Amino acid sequence: MFLLVFLLLVFTPPIFGCGEKITAQTGQVKSPNYPNGFYPSNKDCIWDITVSGSSIKLYFESRFGIEVARGCGYDYVQVHSLTSRGASQIGKYCGSQSPGTITISSNHIRVKFHSDSSATDKGFSANFSAVVNGGWSDWGDYTDSGQCSNTCGTGTKRQTRTRQCDNPAPLGGGSQCSGSSSEDQTVACKLRECPVHGGWSTWSDYEPGQCSVSCGTGYQNETSSRDCNNPTPSNGGEDCQGDDVRTRETTCSMDPCPRICELDGTKMPYARDFTKYNECQDNQLVLKTCPYKYSWDQNKQKCVKVCPLFVVKSLADPNDCYKYIQCVWGFYIVMSCPSGTAYAADLKVCKHVRDVQCQY
Ligand SMILES: [Ca+2]
Image 1 (cartoon, rainbow, N blue to C red):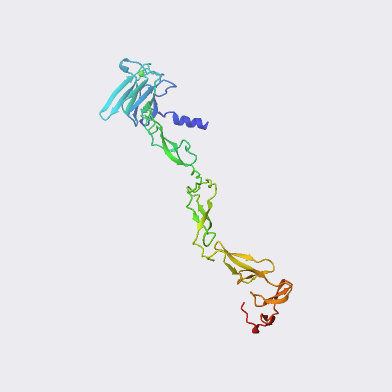
Image 2: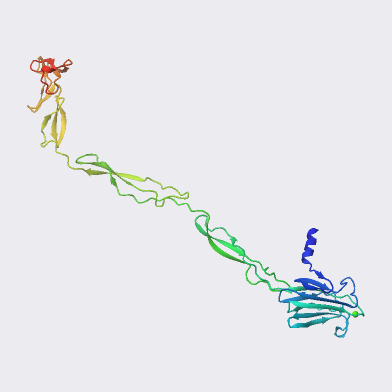
């Protein structure tokens, strides 16, 4: 109920009484008692109506009755256009025929009702309205009217802005605004960065490792590497697959090895073990062992029996002054002299160390 009253208040044009100066865009003027009874005799009502706009429309209701007379000489409703140059009559109406709709090219009019002392009638009612051509409001802000074209990375989206034909709104049959009430633009957008999967750099050159020999020719492991930086994975992208290091085996040549023995076949005693000797083979010293019960004799350049058969005697250990060799029937045992003594070869006994000239 409240809403209905509110709407009536807003949309029902104000009704003005008999004779007023009116400054309004719309309204209604009518003869006294309309539509409930006849207008009184000897009545004058003058409404000066001013609107903002270029012209005014008057809508006379079809229920119309004003005492008819030649030239509307008794009673009448009269409309003037008022300008700075003065008043000019638009029309003077009486009888039972409603004038209908009249458009006056002025924003200022005068409506006059007059009745004389004789007969009366139903009267009239006229709604007036300024004629206003519509004008656009300012554009509103752009708002998104579409989704970003790409789910990641830079894409585009559509935006729309609107305007209203309310500045001013068209009124009284004025023209609508021309042109579109909305317009679009396309702008760049990015919901998130795209994931970047890792990519390998090119392999580095092979770097030689440690050579297996310090002289001559040997082997080495060469390594080469690469990095997952072409590109580096980012924004959730995957790492590179595979190894980042590779190796290969190559030969390596160091300085020639010093010659240990000049001549193949050269034989030399082996320190600390008289049953062994060294022999030059292919420029390398090769350790060799004499047969069981034999020892190396450098002078004879061959392995000789340590102990003669069927003899029990002791011999000096050629490599260790503190030991001696006990021969027993062709076999031998390496014996140690008691602590503090050494083997005196000439006496074939262990004697105090100060009495023995030890060479080893
Ligand atoms: Ca009359």
